[in-house]
Image 1 (tube, one colour):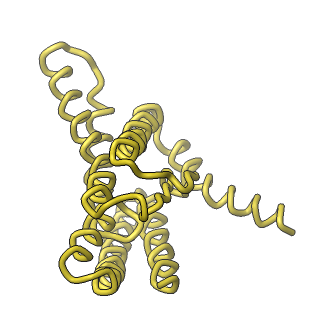
Image 2: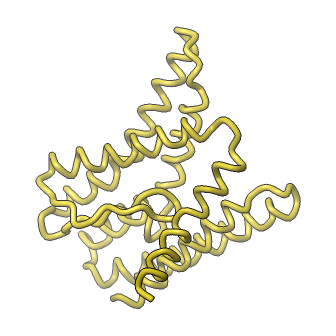
Image 3: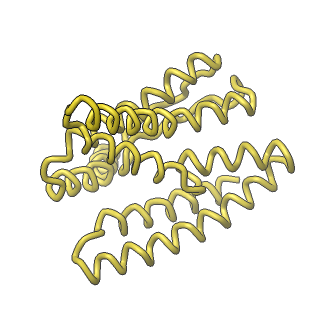
Length: 196
Protein backbone atom coordinates (compact mmCIF):
# COMPACT_ATOMS: atom_id res chain seq x y z
CA UNK A 1 0.00 0.00 0.00
CA UNK A 2 2.86 2.35 0.84
CA UNK A 3 4.43 1.75 -2.58
CA UNK A 4 1.10 2.48 -4.26
CA UNK A 5 0.84 5.81 -2.40
CA UNK A 6 4.39 6.65 -3.40
CA UNK A 7 3.69 5.80 -7.05
CA UNK A 8 0.49 7.89 -6.98
CA UNK A 9 2.45 10.81 -5.50
CA UNK A 10 5.12 10.57 -8.18
CA UNK A 11 2.48 10.32 -10.91
CA UNK A 12 0.64 13.35 -9.48
CA UNK A 13 3.89 15.32 -9.49
CA UNK A 14 4.91 14.19 -12.97
CA UNK A 15 1.53 14.55 -14.72
CA UNK A 16 1.56 18.37 -15.09
CA UNK A 17 5.14 18.26 -16.37
CA UNK A 18 4.25 15.51 -18.86
CA UNK A 19 1.25 17.53 -20.06
CA UNK A 20 3.44 20.60 -20.42
CA UNK A 21 6.00 18.63 -22.45
CA UNK A 22 3.32 17.29 -24.77
CA UNK A 23 1.74 20.70 -25.33
CA UNK A 24 4.89 22.82 -25.35
CA UNK A 25 6.47 22.01 -28.67
CA UNK A 26 10.01 23.36 -28.69
CA UNK A 27 10.05 25.21 -25.37
CA UNK A 28 10.78 22.31 -23.01
CA UNK A 29 14.56 22.78 -22.99
CA UNK A 30 14.41 26.56 -22.35
CA UNK A 31 11.79 25.93 -19.64
CA UNK A 32 13.98 23.30 -17.94
CA UNK A 33 16.98 25.65 -18.16
CA UNK A 34 14.98 28.51 -16.60
CA UNK A 35 13.83 26.26 -13.74
CA UNK A 36 17.42 25.07 -13.25
CA UNK A 37 18.69 28.67 -13.04
CA UNK A 38 15.86 29.59 -10.65
CA UNK A 39 16.40 26.71 -8.22
CA UNK A 40 20.18 26.94 -8.54
CA UNK A 41 20.07 30.58 -7.45
CA UNK A 42 18.04 29.61 -4.39
CA UNK A 43 20.65 27.00 -3.46
CA UNK A 44 23.62 29.33 -3.99
CA UNK A 45 22.11 32.15 -1.89
CA UNK A 46 21.02 29.67 0.78
CA UNK A 47 24.64 28.51 1.09
CA UNK A 48 25.96 32.08 1.12
CA UNK A 49 23.47 33.06 3.83
CA UNK A 50 24.57 30.14 5.99
CA UNK A 51 21.29 28.24 5.75
CA UNK A 52 20.66 24.53 5.55
CA UNK A 53 18.46 22.68 3.11
CA UNK A 54 16.03 20.32 4.83
CA UNK A 55 14.63 18.66 1.70
CA UNK A 56 14.56 19.12 -2.05
CA UNK A 57 11.88 17.29 -4.00
CA UNK A 58 10.00 17.50 -7.28
CA UNK A 59 6.62 19.16 -7.08
CA UNK A 60 3.84 19.26 -9.66
CA UNK A 61 4.93 22.70 -10.86
CA UNK A 62 8.69 22.76 -10.52
CA UNK A 63 10.70 21.88 -7.45
CA UNK A 64 10.02 22.31 -3.75
CA UNK A 65 12.79 23.28 -1.37
CA UNK A 66 12.29 23.17 2.37
CA UNK A 67 14.87 25.14 4.25
CA UNK A 68 15.66 25.04 7.95
CA UNK A 69 14.35 28.46 8.99
CA UNK A 70 16.25 28.26 12.29
CA UNK A 71 19.53 28.67 10.41
CA UNK A 72 18.52 31.92 8.66
CA UNK A 73 17.65 35.42 9.73
CA UNK A 74 14.57 37.07 8.24
CA UNK A 75 16.87 38.98 5.91
CA UNK A 76 18.49 35.70 4.84
CA UNK A 77 15.08 34.12 4.19
CA UNK A 78 14.08 37.11 2.07
CA UNK A 79 17.34 36.90 0.10
CA UNK A 80 16.83 33.19 -0.57
CA UNK A 81 13.20 33.74 -1.63
CA UNK A 82 14.08 36.63 -3.95
CA UNK A 83 17.15 35.02 -5.51
CA UNK A 84 15.33 32.66 -7.90
CA UNK A 85 13.25 35.37 -9.52
CA UNK A 86 16.21 37.77 -9.54
CA UNK A 87 18.30 35.18 -11.40
CA UNK A 88 15.49 34.63 -13.90
CA UNK A 89 15.13 38.38 -14.50
CA UNK A 90 18.89 38.67 -14.97
CA UNK A 91 18.83 35.81 -17.50
CA UNK A 92 15.90 37.43 -19.30
CA UNK A 93 17.83 40.70 -19.60
CA UNK A 94 20.99 38.99 -20.80
CA UNK A 95 18.97 36.97 -23.32
CA UNK A 96 17.40 40.11 -24.77
CA UNK A 97 20.81 41.80 -25.01
CA UNK A 98 22.39 38.76 -26.71
CA UNK A 99 19.48 38.55 -29.12
CA UNK A 100 19.55 42.26 -29.90
CA UNK A 101 23.28 42.89 -30.21
CA UNK A 102 24.91 39.52 -30.95
CA UNK A 103 22.17 37.78 -32.97
CA UNK A 104 22.19 34.85 -30.54
CA UNK A 105 18.73 33.28 -30.67
CA UNK A 106 17.93 32.54 -27.04
CA UNK A 107 14.94 34.83 -26.87
CA UNK A 108 12.61 31.92 -25.96
CA UNK A 109 14.75 31.25 -22.87
CA UNK A 110 14.58 34.94 -21.98
CA UNK A 111 10.81 35.11 -22.30
CA UNK A 112 10.31 31.94 -20.27
CA UNK A 113 12.73 33.19 -17.60
CA UNK A 114 10.86 36.48 -17.39
CA UNK A 115 7.46 34.76 -17.09
CA UNK A 116 8.80 32.30 -14.51
CA UNK A 117 10.10 35.21 -12.43
CA UNK A 118 6.76 37.03 -12.59
CA UNK A 119 4.81 33.91 -11.75
CA UNK A 120 7.02 33.14 -8.77
CA UNK A 121 6.60 36.68 -7.43
CA UNK A 122 2.84 36.25 -7.02
CA UNK A 123 2.00 36.69 -3.32
CA UNK A 124 0.79 33.10 -2.82
CA UNK A 125 1.82 30.60 -0.19
CA UNK A 126 4.00 28.06 -2.01
CA UNK A 127 5.62 30.65 -4.27
CA UNK A 128 8.62 32.90 -3.64
CA UNK A 129 6.43 36.01 -3.57
CA UNK A 130 4.39 34.47 -0.78
CA UNK A 131 7.55 33.74 1.19
CA UNK A 132 8.75 37.32 0.67
CA UNK A 133 5.41 38.70 1.85
CA UNK A 134 5.45 36.40 4.88
CA UNK A 135 8.97 37.51 5.86
CA UNK A 136 8.09 41.21 5.49
CA UNK A 137 4.88 40.90 7.50
CA UNK A 138 6.51 38.69 10.15
CA UNK A 139 9.24 41.28 10.68
CA UNK A 140 6.67 44.04 11.25
CA UNK A 141 3.63 42.37 12.82
CA UNK A 142 4.72 38.88 13.92
CA UNK A 143 4.50 35.40 12.38
CA UNK A 144 0.86 34.70 13.33
CA UNK A 145 -0.42 37.83 11.61
CA UNK A 146 1.82 37.13 8.61
CA UNK A 147 0.50 33.56 8.29
CA UNK A 148 -3.14 34.68 8.45
CA UNK A 149 -2.64 37.44 5.88
CA UNK A 150 -0.74 35.15 3.54
CA UNK A 151 -3.47 32.48 3.74
CA UNK A 152 -6.22 34.92 2.88
CA UNK A 153 -4.24 36.53 0.08
CA UNK A 154 -3.29 33.13 -1.36
CA UNK A 155 -6.94 32.08 -1.52
CA UNK A 156 -7.75 35.33 -3.33
CA UNK A 157 -4.85 34.93 -5.79
CA UNK A 158 -5.68 31.28 -6.50
CA UNK A 159 -9.37 32.13 -7.02
CA UNK A 160 -8.65 34.88 -9.55
CA UNK A 161 -5.96 32.79 -11.25
CA UNK A 162 -8.52 29.98 -11.55
CA UNK A 163 -11.06 32.34 -13.10
CA UNK A 164 -8.50 33.68 -15.58
CA UNK A 165 -7.25 30.20 -16.48
CA UNK A 166 -10.80 28.84 -16.84
CA UNK A 167 -11.66 31.72 -19.16
CA UNK A 168 -8.59 30.93 -21.26
CA UNK A 169 -9.46 27.26 -21.33
CA UNK A 170 -13.05 27.86 -22.36
CA UNK A 171 -12.36 30.51 -25.00
CA UNK A 172 -9.10 29.32 -26.54
CA UNK A 173 -8.76 25.66 -25.50
CA UNK A 174 -5.46 26.70 -23.88
CA UNK A 175 -4.82 27.05 -20.18
CA UNK A 176 -5.24 23.56 -18.72
CA UNK A 177 -1.82 23.87 -17.11
CA UNK A 178 -2.85 27.22 -15.56
CA UNK A 179 -6.08 25.72 -14.17
CA UNK A 180 -4.07 22.90 -12.59
CA UNK A 181 -1.62 25.44 -11.20
CA UNK A 182 -4.41 27.42 -9.49
CA UNK A 183 -5.73 24.21 -7.94
CA UNK A 184 -2.23 23.31 -6.75
CA UNK A 185 -1.84 26.71 -5.05
CA UNK A 186 -5.25 26.30 -3.40
CA UNK A 187 -4.42 22.82 -2.06
CA UNK A 188 -0.95 23.82 -0.83
CA UNK A 189 -2.43 26.84 0.92
CA UNK A 190 -5.05 24.68 2.61
CA UNK A 191 -2.29 22.36 3.84
CA UNK A 192 -0.38 25.43 5.11
CA UNK A 193 -3.47 26.82 6.85
CA UNK A 194 -4.24 23.59 8.67
CA UNK A 195 -0.62 23.02 9.68
CA UNK A 196 -0.55 26.28 11.67
